[in-house]
Image 1: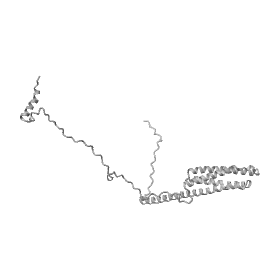
Image 2: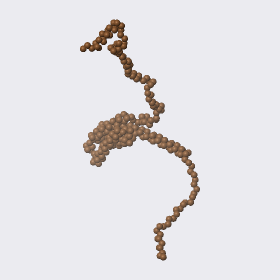
Image 3: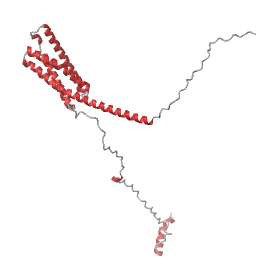
Image 4: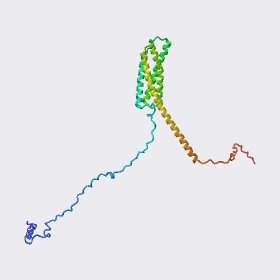
Length: 269
Protein backbone atom coordinates (compact mmCIF):
# COMPACT_ATOMS: atom_id res chain seq x y z
CA UNK A 1 0.00 0.00 0.00
CA UNK A 2 1.39 3.29 -1.01
CA UNK A 3 1.51 5.57 1.96
CA UNK A 4 1.11 9.30 1.82
CA UNK A 5 4.10 9.93 3.95
CA UNK A 6 6.36 8.63 1.19
CA UNK A 7 5.30 11.60 -1.02
CA UNK A 8 6.40 14.17 1.50
CA UNK A 9 10.05 14.24 0.46
CA UNK A 10 9.07 14.59 -3.19
CA UNK A 11 6.75 17.55 -2.45
CA UNK A 12 9.52 19.24 -0.49
CA UNK A 13 11.92 18.81 -3.42
CA UNK A 14 9.41 20.37 -5.87
CA UNK A 15 8.89 23.34 -3.56
CA UNK A 16 12.65 23.88 -3.32
CA UNK A 17 12.92 23.96 -7.13
CA UNK A 18 9.96 26.31 -7.59
CA UNK A 19 10.15 28.64 -4.63
CA UNK A 20 13.64 28.29 -3.27
CA UNK A 21 14.63 27.10 0.17
CA UNK A 22 11.63 26.17 2.21
CA UNK A 23 10.80 28.11 5.29
CA UNK A 24 11.45 26.84 8.70
CA UNK A 25 7.76 26.24 9.15
CA UNK A 26 7.76 23.75 6.27
CA UNK A 27 10.85 21.98 7.42
CA UNK A 28 9.80 22.22 11.03
CA UNK A 29 8.55 18.66 10.93
CA UNK A 30 11.73 17.25 9.41
CA UNK A 31 14.36 19.52 10.75
CA UNK A 32 14.68 19.18 14.43
CA UNK A 33 16.67 21.91 15.95
CA UNK A 34 19.36 20.58 18.09
CA UNK A 35 19.42 22.30 21.39
CA UNK A 36 22.87 22.86 22.56
CA UNK A 37 23.13 22.37 26.21
CA UNK A 38 24.69 25.30 27.96
CA UNK A 39 28.28 24.79 28.67
CA UNK A 40 28.90 23.87 32.20
CA UNK A 41 32.08 25.03 33.63
CA UNK A 42 34.21 22.22 34.87
CA UNK A 43 34.50 22.29 38.57
CA UNK A 44 38.10 22.95 39.37
CA UNK A 45 39.39 21.55 42.62
CA UNK A 46 40.24 24.13 45.24
CA UNK A 47 43.87 25.15 45.17
CA UNK A 48 46.02 23.46 47.75
CA UNK A 49 46.72 25.58 50.75
CA UNK A 50 49.88 27.48 50.30
CA UNK A 51 52.54 26.80 52.90
CA UNK A 52 52.38 29.31 55.66
CA UNK A 53 55.06 31.86 55.58
CA UNK A 54 57.41 32.10 58.55
CA UNK A 55 55.61 35.23 59.65
CA UNK A 56 52.25 33.39 59.76
CA UNK A 57 53.45 30.38 61.77
CA UNK A 58 51.86 29.79 65.15
CA UNK A 59 53.93 31.48 67.75
CA UNK A 60 54.68 29.20 70.69
CA UNK A 61 55.26 30.48 74.15
CA UNK A 62 58.92 30.81 74.95
CA UNK A 63 59.97 30.25 78.52
CA UNK A 64 62.97 32.35 79.30
CA UNK A 65 65.49 30.90 81.66
CA UNK A 66 66.44 33.16 84.53
CA UNK A 67 69.68 34.96 84.05
CA UNK A 68 70.89 34.05 87.51
CA UNK A 69 70.92 30.38 88.40
CA UNK A 70 70.25 29.36 91.99
CA UNK A 71 73.27 28.68 94.08
CA UNK A 72 74.25 25.03 94.11
CA UNK A 73 75.36 23.27 97.30
CA UNK A 74 79.05 23.25 97.89
CA UNK A 75 80.85 20.19 96.57
CA UNK A 76 84.02 18.56 97.76
CA UNK A 77 86.00 19.20 94.59
CA UNK A 78 87.65 22.26 96.13
CA UNK A 79 88.17 20.81 99.58
CA UNK A 80 91.70 19.85 100.54
CA UNK A 81 92.12 16.07 100.61
CA UNK A 82 88.82 15.29 98.90
CA UNK A 83 88.77 12.55 96.28
CA UNK A 84 86.80 12.35 93.07
CA UNK A 85 84.82 9.15 92.37
CA UNK A 86 87.47 7.75 90.04
CA UNK A 87 90.21 8.52 92.58
CA UNK A 88 88.24 6.82 95.33
CA UNK A 89 87.76 3.74 93.13
CA UNK A 90 91.52 3.56 92.48
CA UNK A 91 92.27 3.93 96.21
CA UNK A 92 89.91 1.13 97.18
CA UNK A 93 91.39 -1.09 94.47
CA UNK A 94 94.89 -0.57 95.85
CA UNK A 95 93.62 -1.26 99.37
CA UNK A 96 92.16 -4.55 98.17
CA UNK A 97 95.55 -5.56 96.74
CA UNK A 98 97.18 -4.66 100.07
CA UNK A 99 94.69 -6.87 101.92
CA UNK A 100 95.40 -9.81 99.60
CA UNK A 101 99.12 -9.29 100.03
CA UNK A 102 98.89 -9.31 103.82
CA UNK A 103 96.67 -12.41 103.85
CA UNK A 104 99.09 -14.20 101.50
CA UNK A 105 102.06 -13.36 103.71
CA UNK A 106 100.28 -14.58 106.83
CA UNK A 107 99.65 -18.00 105.29
CA UNK A 108 103.40 -18.61 105.11
CA UNK A 109 104.07 -17.79 108.75
CA UNK A 110 104.80 -21.05 110.64
CA UNK A 111 105.47 -20.19 114.29
CA UNK A 112 105.49 -23.85 115.32
CA UNK A 113 108.89 -24.18 113.65
CA UNK A 114 110.34 -21.47 115.83
CA UNK A 115 112.02 -22.27 119.10
CA UNK A 116 109.57 -20.54 121.38
CA UNK A 117 108.22 -21.26 124.80
CA UNK A 118 104.68 -22.46 124.90
CA UNK A 119 103.23 -19.24 126.45
CA UNK A 120 105.06 -17.11 123.87
CA UNK A 121 103.86 -19.37 121.05
CA UNK A 122 100.27 -19.18 122.28
CA UNK A 123 100.46 -15.40 122.46
CA UNK A 124 101.83 -15.14 118.93
CA UNK A 125 99.17 -17.50 117.57
CA UNK A 126 96.48 -15.36 119.23
CA UNK A 127 98.01 -12.29 117.58
CA UNK A 128 97.92 -13.99 114.18
CA UNK A 129 94.28 -14.99 114.68
CA UNK A 130 93.29 -11.47 115.68
CA UNK A 131 95.20 -10.00 112.75
CA UNK A 132 93.42 -12.27 110.27
CA UNK A 133 90.02 -11.35 111.67
CA UNK A 134 90.87 -7.65 111.47
CA UNK A 135 91.94 -8.02 107.85
CA UNK A 136 88.60 -9.69 107.13
CA UNK A 137 86.77 -6.81 108.84
CA UNK A 138 88.74 -4.32 106.77
CA UNK A 139 87.70 -6.15 103.60
CA UNK A 140 84.02 -6.03 104.55
CA UNK A 141 84.05 -2.30 105.34
CA UNK A 142 85.98 -1.58 102.16
CA UNK A 143 83.40 -3.42 100.02
CA UNK A 144 80.55 -1.43 101.60
CA UNK A 145 82.44 1.81 101.07
CA UNK A 146 82.89 0.93 97.40
CA UNK A 147 79.11 0.89 97.02
CA UNK A 148 78.60 4.21 98.85
CA UNK A 149 81.74 6.29 98.50
CA UNK A 150 80.05 9.43 99.87
CA UNK A 151 79.16 7.80 103.20
CA UNK A 152 81.01 9.36 106.11
CA UNK A 153 80.15 6.44 108.39
CA UNK A 154 81.52 3.77 106.03
CA UNK A 155 84.60 5.85 105.32
CA UNK A 156 85.33 6.22 109.03
CA UNK A 157 84.78 2.50 109.69
CA UNK A 158 87.17 1.57 106.87
CA UNK A 159 89.73 4.03 108.24
CA UNK A 160 89.37 2.57 111.75
CA UNK A 161 89.65 -1.01 110.45
CA UNK A 162 92.94 -0.18 108.71
CA UNK A 163 94.13 1.52 111.90
CA UNK A 164 93.50 -1.72 113.82
CA UNK A 165 95.48 -3.83 111.31
CA UNK A 166 98.65 -1.72 111.20
CA UNK A 167 100.08 -2.12 114.75
CA UNK A 168 99.60 -5.89 114.86
CA UNK A 169 101.06 -6.22 111.37
CA UNK A 170 104.13 -4.30 112.56
CA UNK A 171 104.48 -6.63 115.57
CA UNK A 172 104.30 -9.72 113.37
CA UNK A 173 106.96 -8.21 111.07
CA UNK A 174 109.34 -7.77 114.03
CA UNK A 175 108.84 -11.35 115.21
CA UNK A 176 109.34 -12.67 111.68
CA UNK A 177 112.58 -10.69 111.41
CA UNK A 178 113.87 -12.27 114.61
CA UNK A 179 112.82 -15.88 114.01
CA UNK A 180 112.82 -16.08 110.21
CA UNK A 181 114.86 -13.64 108.10
CA UNK A 182 114.99 -9.92 107.38
CA UNK A 183 113.86 -10.16 103.73
CA UNK A 184 110.65 -11.93 104.70
CA UNK A 185 109.98 -9.35 107.41
CA UNK A 186 110.60 -6.55 104.89
CA UNK A 187 107.69 -7.80 102.82
CA UNK A 188 105.38 -7.37 105.82
CA UNK A 189 106.74 -3.87 106.37
CA UNK A 190 106.25 -2.97 102.71
CA UNK A 191 102.60 -4.14 102.76
CA UNK A 192 102.05 -2.22 106.01
CA UNK A 193 103.54 0.98 104.55
CA UNK A 194 101.32 0.73 101.49
CA UNK A 195 98.21 0.24 103.66
CA UNK A 196 99.25 3.18 105.86
CA UNK A 197 99.55 5.53 102.88
CA UNK A 198 96.11 4.50 101.61
CA UNK A 199 94.66 4.95 105.08
CA UNK A 200 96.00 8.50 105.29
CA UNK A 201 94.43 9.44 101.96
CA UNK A 202 91.13 7.93 103.07
CA UNK A 203 91.33 9.83 106.36
CA UNK A 204 91.81 13.13 104.50
CA UNK A 205 88.76 12.37 102.37
CA UNK A 206 86.64 11.57 105.42
CA UNK A 207 87.84 14.79 107.08
CA UNK A 208 86.77 16.76 104.00
CA UNK A 209 83.32 15.14 104.14
CA UNK A 210 83.00 16.02 107.82
CA UNK A 211 84.07 19.60 107.18
CA UNK A 212 81.54 20.03 104.39
CA UNK A 213 78.76 18.58 106.55
CA UNK A 214 79.74 20.81 109.44
CA UNK A 215 79.55 23.89 107.21
CA UNK A 216 76.10 22.87 105.96
CA UNK A 217 74.81 22.35 109.49
CA UNK A 218 76.24 25.72 110.55
CA UNK A 219 74.53 27.44 107.61
CA UNK A 220 71.22 25.77 108.47
CA UNK A 221 71.52 26.87 112.09
CA UNK A 222 72.22 30.46 111.03
CA UNK A 223 69.24 30.48 108.67
CA UNK A 224 66.98 29.06 111.38
CA UNK A 225 68.11 31.66 113.89
CA UNK A 226 67.51 34.47 111.38
CA UNK A 227 64.02 33.15 110.58
CA UNK A 228 63.13 32.93 114.26
CA UNK A 229 64.38 36.45 114.87
CA UNK A 230 62.40 37.96 111.98
CA UNK A 231 59.28 36.00 112.93
CA UNK A 232 59.52 37.19 116.51
CA UNK A 233 59.85 40.79 115.36
CA UNK A 234 56.78 40.49 113.15
CA UNK A 235 54.73 38.88 115.91
CA UNK A 236 55.68 41.58 118.42
CA UNK A 237 54.48 44.32 116.04
CA UNK A 238 51.16 42.75 115.06
CA UNK A 239 50.11 41.06 118.31
CA UNK A 240 47.63 43.13 120.41
CA UNK A 241 48.68 44.33 123.79
CA UNK A 242 47.40 42.51 126.80
CA UNK A 243 44.63 44.40 128.68
CA UNK A 244 44.67 44.20 132.47
CA UNK A 245 41.61 42.72 134.13
CA UNK A 246 40.18 43.57 137.54
CA UNK A 247 40.21 40.91 140.13
CA UNK A 248 36.76 39.55 140.91
CA UNK A 249 35.52 37.41 143.72
CA UNK A 250 35.18 33.82 142.69
CA UNK A 251 31.67 32.57 142.16
CA UNK A 252 31.02 29.64 144.39
CA UNK A 253 28.53 27.05 143.17
CA UNK A 254 25.32 26.68 145.14
CA UNK A 255 25.11 23.74 147.42
CA UNK A 256 22.96 20.98 146.21
CA UNK A 257 20.23 19.58 148.42
CA UNK A 258 20.68 16.00 149.37
CA UNK A 259 18.29 13.69 147.66
CA UNK A 260 18.78 11.02 150.26
CA UNK A 261 16.55 12.69 152.82
CA UNK A 262 13.86 10.35 154.07
CA UNK A 263 10.31 11.27 153.13
CA UNK A 264 8.17 12.61 155.98
CA UNK A 265 5.61 10.10 157.31
CA UNK A 266 2.06 10.83 156.34
CA UNK A 267 -0.11 11.51 159.40
CA UNK A 268 -3.35 9.63 159.48
CA UNK A 269 -6.46 11.75 159.82
